[in-house]
Image 1: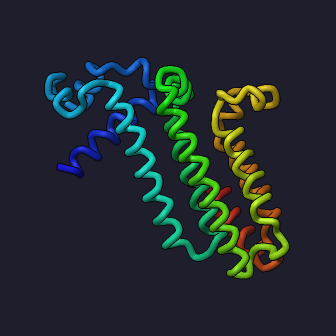
Image 2: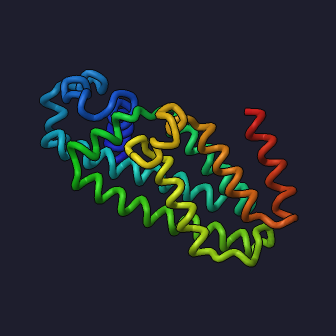
Image 3: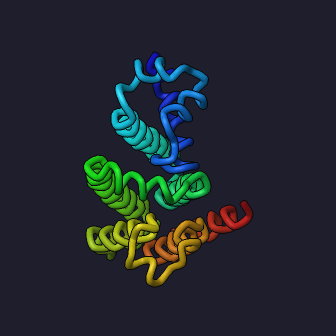
Length: 211
Protein backbone atom coordinates (compact mmCIF):
# COMPACT_ATOMS: atom_id res chain seq x y z
CA UNK A 1 0.00 0.00 0.00
CA UNK A 2 2.85 2.37 0.87
CA UNK A 3 4.56 1.74 -2.49
CA UNK A 4 1.26 2.36 -4.26
CA UNK A 5 0.85 5.68 -2.41
CA UNK A 6 4.40 6.71 -3.33
CA UNK A 7 3.73 5.94 -6.99
CA UNK A 8 0.55 8.03 -6.88
CA UNK A 9 2.50 10.94 -5.40
CA UNK A 10 5.25 10.64 -8.02
CA UNK A 11 2.65 10.66 -10.80
CA UNK A 12 1.02 13.79 -9.38
CA UNK A 13 4.44 15.36 -8.93
CA UNK A 14 5.21 14.85 -12.62
CA UNK A 15 1.93 16.62 -13.49
CA UNK A 16 2.81 19.58 -11.27
CA UNK A 17 6.32 19.78 -12.73
CA UNK A 18 4.96 19.83 -16.28
CA UNK A 19 1.99 22.16 -15.86
CA UNK A 20 2.34 23.91 -12.51
CA UNK A 21 0.17 23.34 -9.45
CA UNK A 22 -2.61 25.86 -10.03
CA UNK A 23 -3.57 24.63 -13.50
CA UNK A 24 -3.81 20.95 -12.47
CA UNK A 25 -7.24 20.20 -11.00
CA UNK A 26 -8.36 17.24 -8.91
CA UNK A 27 -10.29 16.11 -12.02
CA UNK A 28 -7.06 16.17 -14.03
CA UNK A 29 -5.29 14.16 -11.33
CA UNK A 30 -8.02 11.52 -11.07
CA UNK A 31 -7.98 11.09 -14.87
CA UNK A 32 -4.20 10.75 -14.93
CA UNK A 33 -4.32 8.16 -12.14
CA UNK A 34 -7.22 6.31 -13.73
CA UNK A 35 -9.36 6.53 -10.60
CA UNK A 36 -12.56 8.33 -9.73
CA UNK A 37 -12.51 11.71 -8.07
CA UNK A 38 -14.37 10.15 -5.14
CA UNK A 39 -11.57 7.61 -4.68
CA UNK A 40 -9.00 10.38 -4.90
CA UNK A 41 -10.69 12.15 -1.99
CA UNK A 42 -10.44 9.00 0.11
CA UNK A 43 -6.64 9.27 -0.27
CA UNK A 44 -6.36 13.05 0.18
CA UNK A 45 -8.98 15.10 1.98
CA UNK A 46 -8.35 18.12 -0.29
CA UNK A 47 -5.83 19.62 -2.69
CA UNK A 48 -3.94 21.33 0.14
CA UNK A 49 -3.17 17.98 1.75
CA UNK A 50 -2.33 16.52 -1.63
CA UNK A 51 0.17 19.29 -2.43
CA UNK A 52 1.74 18.99 1.01
CA UNK A 53 2.28 15.25 0.58
CA UNK A 54 3.55 15.60 -2.98
CA UNK A 55 6.16 18.14 -1.91
CA UNK A 56 7.23 16.05 1.11
CA UNK A 57 7.43 12.92 -1.04
CA UNK A 58 9.53 14.69 -3.64
CA UNK A 59 11.94 15.78 -0.91
CA UNK A 60 12.16 12.22 0.43
CA UNK A 61 12.72 10.86 -3.08
CA UNK A 62 15.58 13.31 -3.74
CA UNK A 63 17.14 12.54 -0.35
CA UNK A 64 17.24 8.85 -1.22
CA UNK A 65 18.93 9.69 -4.51
CA UNK A 66 21.52 11.81 -2.73
CA UNK A 67 22.12 9.18 -0.04
CA UNK A 68 22.71 6.65 -2.81
CA UNK A 69 25.21 9.00 -4.44
CA UNK A 70 27.09 9.34 -1.16
CA UNK A 71 27.31 5.58 -0.77
CA UNK A 72 28.21 4.63 -4.35
CA UNK A 73 30.43 7.49 -5.56
CA UNK A 74 34.12 6.72 -5.92
CA UNK A 75 35.04 10.05 -4.35
CA UNK A 76 33.77 13.57 -3.65
CA UNK A 77 34.29 14.73 -7.24
CA UNK A 78 32.23 11.90 -8.64
CA UNK A 79 29.54 12.73 -6.06
CA UNK A 80 29.36 16.30 -7.40
CA UNK A 81 29.16 15.01 -10.98
CA UNK A 82 26.22 12.75 -10.06
CA UNK A 83 24.51 15.67 -8.29
CA UNK A 84 24.84 17.68 -11.49
CA UNK A 85 23.10 14.87 -13.37
CA UNK A 86 20.19 15.09 -10.91
CA UNK A 87 20.04 18.84 -11.49
CA UNK A 88 19.77 18.17 -15.21
CA UNK A 89 16.93 15.67 -14.73
CA UNK A 90 15.00 18.16 -12.60
CA UNK A 91 15.51 21.06 -15.01
CA UNK A 92 14.46 19.03 -18.05
CA UNK A 93 11.18 18.02 -16.37
CA UNK A 94 10.55 21.36 -14.67
CA UNK A 95 7.95 24.04 -15.36
CA UNK A 96 8.68 27.42 -13.75
CA UNK A 97 5.00 27.67 -12.78
CA UNK A 98 5.57 24.97 -10.15
CA UNK A 99 7.76 27.16 -7.91
CA UNK A 100 5.67 30.24 -8.65
CA UNK A 101 2.42 28.49 -7.69
CA UNK A 102 3.95 26.95 -4.58
CA UNK A 103 5.18 30.31 -3.35
CA UNK A 104 2.00 32.23 -4.22
CA UNK A 105 -0.74 29.79 -3.22
CA UNK A 106 1.01 27.74 -0.51
CA UNK A 107 3.33 30.27 1.18
CA UNK A 108 3.65 28.42 4.50
CA UNK A 109 4.51 25.18 2.75
CA UNK A 110 6.95 26.99 0.47
CA UNK A 111 8.67 28.65 3.44
CA UNK A 112 8.93 25.32 5.28
CA UNK A 113 10.42 23.53 2.30
CA UNK A 114 12.87 26.32 1.53
CA UNK A 115 14.16 26.19 5.09
CA UNK A 116 14.61 22.42 4.90
CA UNK A 117 16.17 22.61 1.44
CA UNK A 118 18.74 25.22 2.45
CA UNK A 119 19.67 23.23 5.55
CA UNK A 120 20.03 20.02 3.53
CA UNK A 121 22.09 21.74 0.83
CA UNK A 122 24.43 23.26 3.39
CA UNK A 123 24.95 19.91 5.12
CA UNK A 124 25.43 18.04 1.83
CA UNK A 125 28.02 20.42 0.39
CA UNK A 126 29.84 20.81 3.70
CA UNK A 127 30.13 17.04 4.13
CA UNK A 128 31.24 16.54 0.52
CA UNK A 129 33.97 19.16 0.72
CA UNK A 130 35.30 17.65 3.94
CA UNK A 131 35.19 14.28 2.21
CA UNK A 132 37.20 15.61 -0.73
CA UNK A 133 39.80 17.10 1.60
CA UNK A 134 40.16 13.82 3.50
CA UNK A 135 40.49 11.96 0.18
CA UNK A 136 43.33 14.26 -0.83
CA UNK A 137 41.60 15.61 -3.95
CA UNK A 138 40.34 18.99 -2.65
CA UNK A 139 42.53 21.84 -1.49
CA UNK A 140 43.19 21.60 2.25
CA UNK A 141 43.35 25.39 2.68
CA UNK A 142 39.65 25.91 1.93
CA UNK A 143 37.57 27.86 4.45
CA UNK A 144 34.79 25.31 4.21
CA UNK A 145 31.94 27.22 5.88
CA UNK A 146 32.54 30.32 3.76
CA UNK A 147 32.85 28.38 0.50
CA UNK A 148 29.69 26.41 1.26
CA UNK A 149 27.75 29.61 2.00
CA UNK A 150 28.87 31.05 -1.35
CA UNK A 151 27.96 27.82 -3.09
CA UNK A 152 24.50 27.50 -1.55
CA UNK A 153 23.75 31.19 -2.15
CA UNK A 154 24.71 30.87 -5.81
CA UNK A 155 22.70 27.68 -6.30
CA UNK A 156 19.63 29.27 -4.73
CA UNK A 157 19.92 32.36 -6.91
CA UNK A 158 20.13 30.22 -10.04
CA UNK A 159 17.56 27.68 -8.94
CA UNK A 160 14.49 29.84 -9.36
CA UNK A 161 13.29 32.30 -11.96
CA UNK A 162 11.51 33.95 -9.03
CA UNK A 163 14.84 35.51 -8.02
CA UNK A 164 14.54 39.11 -9.15
CA UNK A 165 18.21 39.92 -8.64
CA UNK A 166 19.27 37.00 -10.82
CA UNK A 167 16.78 38.10 -13.50
CA UNK A 168 18.62 41.40 -13.80
CA UNK A 169 21.64 39.49 -15.09
CA UNK A 170 20.22 36.27 -16.55
CA UNK A 171 17.42 35.74 -19.03
CA UNK A 172 14.54 33.43 -18.09
CA UNK A 173 15.91 30.92 -20.57
CA UNK A 174 19.35 30.97 -18.94
CA UNK A 175 17.90 30.49 -15.46
CA UNK A 176 16.04 27.40 -16.65
CA UNK A 177 18.87 26.03 -18.78
CA UNK A 178 20.99 23.10 -17.59
CA UNK A 179 24.05 24.62 -19.30
CA UNK A 180 23.95 27.53 -16.84
CA UNK A 181 24.20 25.13 -13.92
CA UNK A 182 26.80 23.05 -15.72
CA UNK A 183 29.10 26.03 -16.29
CA UNK A 184 28.75 27.12 -12.67
CA UNK A 185 29.33 23.62 -11.25
CA UNK A 186 32.46 23.07 -13.35
CA UNK A 187 33.75 26.51 -12.37
CA UNK A 188 33.09 25.76 -8.71
CA UNK A 189 34.69 22.31 -8.76
CA UNK A 190 37.80 23.55 -10.55
CA UNK A 191 38.23 26.10 -7.78
CA UNK A 192 38.25 23.60 -4.90
CA UNK A 193 40.24 20.68 -6.33
CA UNK A 194 44.00 20.27 -5.93
CA UNK A 195 46.32 18.96 -8.66
CA UNK A 196 45.40 15.32 -8.07
CA UNK A 197 41.70 16.15 -8.00
CA UNK A 198 41.97 18.32 -11.13
CA UNK A 199 43.18 15.40 -13.23
CA UNK A 200 40.27 13.24 -12.08
CA UNK A 201 37.78 16.10 -12.56
CA UNK A 202 38.85 16.78 -16.16
CA UNK A 203 38.24 13.13 -17.05
CA UNK A 204 34.75 13.34 -15.55
CA UNK A 205 34.01 16.60 -17.39
CA UNK A 206 34.80 14.91 -20.70
CA UNK A 207 32.22 12.21 -19.96
CA UNK A 208 29.63 14.89 -19.13
CA UNK A 209 30.35 16.82 -22.31
CA UNK A 210 29.97 13.70 -24.43
CA UNK A 211 26.44 13.05 -23.10
